[in-house]
Length: 402
Image (cartoon, rainbow, N blue to C red; front, side, top):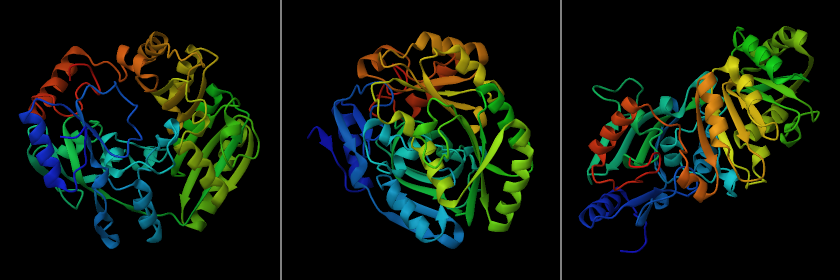
């Protein structure tokens, strides 16, 4: 069998896994490969390339449901939805540009397997919350189906929640059903200028505690602000997005601006300028050029994000999303991720950190994903053994030996 196996349908994917089982081979499960360099380096014999499984298999705009084969590019799905005035509610982050790929090159299967969730997560939830149904091939070589076409369709264990964020270590997903949402009529962003990180976290907390239905809240410090499209000035900017019907957005942006006025100078971005700004947040634009910089994704309690940032080397570049609860940190150009300092700061404050970008040699020597407590690690191992007892699918991608 060739080094790369590219099935044309779910049956061929099942046959590939069964062949690997019979021949004691391990498979790297991938789509377009935009997230291939995330996680521990591949410890596999062959690549199971699912990029040939493309096409939307069901789309019912009135029912807000879409099914597509796992290798379908997100750009294709988002174009179809946009033509029908709809969108992916979880607004998946786009890792492709971090590694030199084009914007929108990732697949729907990859977005679900990595549980990608962008700025709208604070309002709409994570990718797993929009994941309704799946057809997949387990590491036992069995094709299974779970879920369906409506939200409340689960009796017993919800495999969709389990597979989302499993990075292809439990099953090779071949067909996916997701919930979609109406596209807002318009949007606006209230921008507060000149805040330091601590004050920005206070401002975002006040905004999130307001009745104004914020759909995006980020703080862009002065050292990265120039990278973001749509900003009127290259200075520290705390940005708060509002979406919905035009009269509602018009009212909320004025009242939110009044609420934020005590924090600093106010600017308002509307329509295309607002969309450009949040597209830059979604694609992590400040970190797409100096690709030798190790990049961390750190999740903490929003009120304490600035404390963690202060504990990390001042040469790092960073910005905050999810109202301060998600911090993207690019370390200095040395290529050293300084994992001990990062994980020590996270342990002191609470949260977890994932090393998104680093050389393969570094990823092989460090815990890329947050280490688990012994009891949780034992449970993760039992789950892996249940679906993939011989370690056929992406072995060691998340943790060594799992």
